[in-house]
Image (tube, rainbow, N blue to C red; front, side):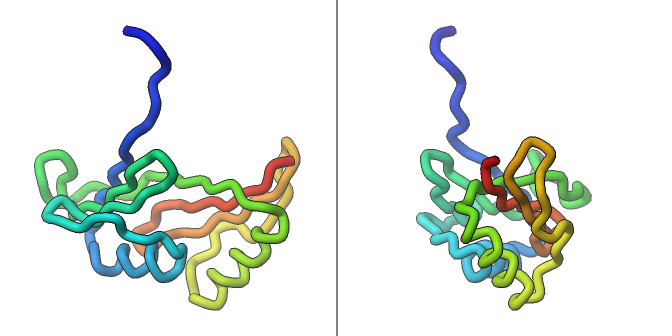
Length: 122
């Protein structure tokens, strides 16, 4: 083995693919780069982010959420994101708050309970 591992793809299993697509596209503003039988793929920098339906051998339908996606933002953007999610009636888990190591963060929930964090560096 040589080099450092780098993340290339992240799959998020979904119970309601259409609802998740609406959230990630309309609320977060991500743009799908590909759609197919495996799901809906978004590009997040160098990482492919795939919303995929639950119910296959890899992701059984009875599994639960458990993913946190963290996005760094500028200080002024944090409050704008907070207002945007409130306007769209998104569940806010933690309103903007200071972080122990500096900076601030707001945490929200997608329609299936996965956590999304917007944070500023301290």
